[in-house]
Every structure is written in C-alpha cells, then in structure tokens.
Amino acid sequence: MYRVLFVTSDLNGKKALKSVLIEQGFSVSAVDVRDVLQESFAPPKADVIVVDLERSPVEPHKLCHVIKRERLLKDLPLVLLVPEAQLGQLDFSWGLEDYLTLPVSPARLIERIKFLMWKLSKVELKNGLKLGALAVDFERYEVHVGGEPVDLTYKEFELLKFLATHPGRVFSREVLLDKVWGYDYYGGTRTVDVHVRRLRSKIETGNCVYIQTVRNVGYKFLAEE
Image 1 (tube, one colour):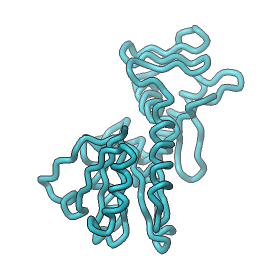
Image 2 (image 1 turned 90 degrees about the horizontal axis):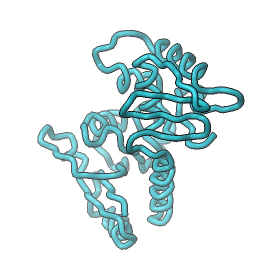
Image 3 (image 1 turned 90 degrees about the vertical axis):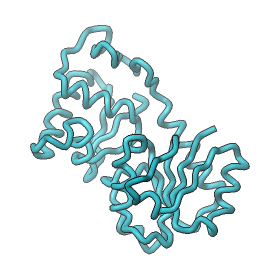
Image 4 (image 1 turned 30 degrees about the vertical axis):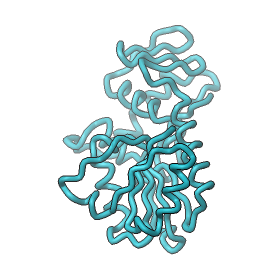
C-alpha cells in the first residue's frame, strides 16, 4: 500500500485519523510542522504528502514551499487538509495536488489518496509512454506521432517529459519555469506559453489533445486522449 507523509501541528488530535490509515494498510510517517522547518529535517520515503493546516503556526504558502524544496518530496502529490476559513487563500501554484475541507473523515481522505495515486500511475514512467498516436522514449529522447519521428528541441522534450510524468496535475507557468528551466533562468512566463504552443503544434494532430490549458492557472498533461 502507499506511504503517507502526514504533516500536522496536532499529532495527538489526529491520532485517530492516522490509526485508520494504518488499519487500511497505509504506511504513515507523522511529523510535526515545526520539525519540517528545521534544516536537519530528513524526510522519510513517501508516495503522497498530506498536510494538516489546522492550528498550523506557519503560513500555508511558506509550509508548502519548504516541503516542495526537499529533493525527495518535490515531485510527490501534495494534499492539504484546510479549515473552511482558509479556503479563499489557497493557490495551486504552491504545488498542491488537491485539498479537503476540515473536518475530514478518514474514509474521505483514503478515497482521495487512492484516486490520486491511481491517476498518477496511469502513464507508464519507466522508459517512456505510449498514449494514442503519441510515443515518447525518455532514455533516447525520441518522440513519434503516428509512427513518424517528431523533432523537438531539448526544452520542448523536457517540458513534455515533465508534464507527461505528472499526468493530471496542474502546473502554473512559474512552477514549470522552475522545474524545466531552473532557478538560474531569468526569462518571463511567456517562455512557457511559447514552448507549449510549439510543442502542441508538433505532437497534437487531428483531434488529439495531450496538453490542456487550465484557465488562470497553467497547464496539465491529460492521461487519456
């Protein structure tokens, strides 16, 4: 079963939630928010991160940034448990995959985790992917559409690879700049739009759509045509 990193400021109050997850076969590593902020924090191996914002002494955006800064955690799906009063403050550019409003039932959380992990595993991630007419070989840096080779630039390929290995997840332009171009790149977010447009023109033929624009947020790779 899946490994859950559960970050909370209320370890005692959330014992019941943790216990049910364990009873249902999940491996749960529960850590205090304050421990995550320490430079000495060594994140355990996990498949998904669940962050409880109730009583958190840290601003949500700062906490998400600290978590996503960790090498072992930056690509994992992040689920926030959010008090209703904080709903208007959420921003998907923080790197979160989903959220649930508190109080949340264990059954609801388990359902959401299973769904996320199922969705993220729909694309084969070992050496490449095959989706409709699109075939991508991550090791050889080769892309074919309908059996015909497609010439992508290095950044176009890296952008496609990043989106395709996180199917269904929405990424803002700022996050894509960070993940694909890196911190040392000083160009604007329009660079992302230009590369997405060129990439689409090369891989999306006929009625096929692989990369979807999410209005006012960014882009995501569709796990199904």
